[in-house]
Length: 113
Image 1 (tube, helix red, strand yellow):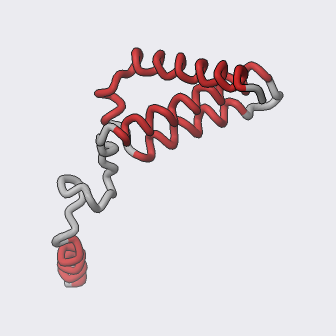
Image 2 (cartoon, one colour):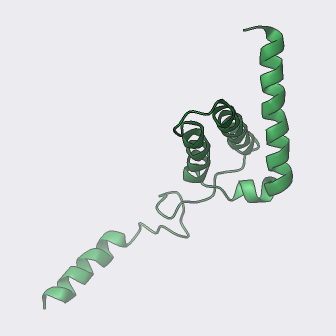
């Protein structure tokens, strides 16, 4: 692959990324969880692999997925933690592990009576 071809591809990814940023913005991006980023990327990759094969759809899906991967990296590198997932142990507001075991045991004991 020539340097010009790679530059053209990277320009397309950059243009798609700018479109996405204009549409959704960094506030929306900051709310995405790790699962959200991966789901968005996989969604566009799966669109790229639909049958019957269509070269244009394949290319569009790859460019969109690449731009989303760039967005995820931008969010990560800007020190924005991904949005909390409901089961993340580091999310003290949503997932309180301090008394979870005691609550479960208490529920079992009261249900046995």
